Amino acid sequence: MNMKNQLKLANRFREVILNGTWIANTNFKDQLENLDYKIATAKFQNLNTISILAQHIHYYIKGITSVLLGGDLEIRDKFSFDFPPVESQQQWDNFLSHFWKDSEEFAKLIETLPDDKLNTDFVEEKYGTYIRNIDGMIEHSYYHLGQIVLIRKMIENQN
Image (cartoon, rainbow, N blue to C red):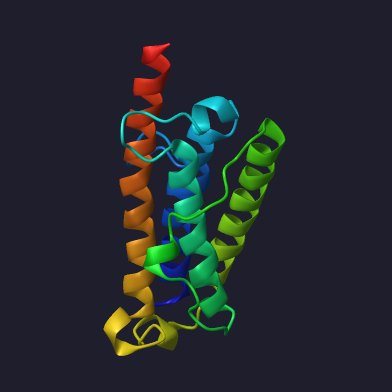
């Protein structure tokens, strides 16, 4: 891979979170930016809330960012859905502001990854390579974006 490929990866990540429409015809920012926190936190049957799903993706972005910055992998799957409740529009808007900022930081870190790093082990061999984890983050984000779109439609059609 060359740096051009890091840019492609970073832009694929930006597409799902910040600005793309190519794969899903939407992205996280498009779905969440002007969303009333009452819809974001509304429970639909036994599904996760939109808020929880967005925070779940943010949790992984923050965790992988820590590693890209030279830190340890401190996130754990078992905690990836545990967040305090969002109880106001201000809290929701503050979360989204961090989500967009942290997503852009993550994308910029991908862009600057050295070529030789992409195919090395991400923290430990069992986690696969850096490129596999970045691709996984993108795919994981699309998976939950689809859920968010469907949950939002179900909630909005219920009212």
